[in-house]
Length: 161
Image (cartoon, rainbow, N blue to C red; front, side, top):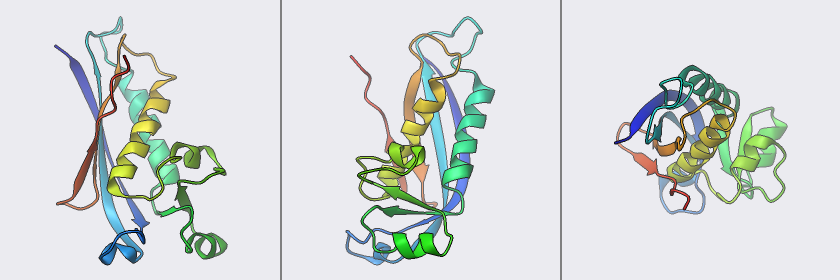
């Protein structure tokens, strides 16, 4: 038996995928939604999986501060420089020398596909949980990211052995 809690949030962001064929080579935006599920085999001393309020605040603050009304691009995308020069918020995926902590979490993810955004948000959830009271064995079990009503990616981090 496992106990689970899920935090749901949404944000508006643009991205483009010039490395794939099709319409996603053009800069475009989505109304993204994310659901992060944390599970634990047993409840902790506080009778919780994780301090739920703090998890919600941490995840939502990060998303609102780094992704909402921002543009997600690959670090090698030619649009990075002109958008930054115009004052747009840009989160670079796959940067070799990340300029900030947010971009460090996107290392190894060269393009902002919905799958990569799910991995990024899983890493964010893990970093938020690192400083929170939680049950023994509590971990990010699943991150579901929806970029449209019909298109969803699911990331399930592997359980460390």
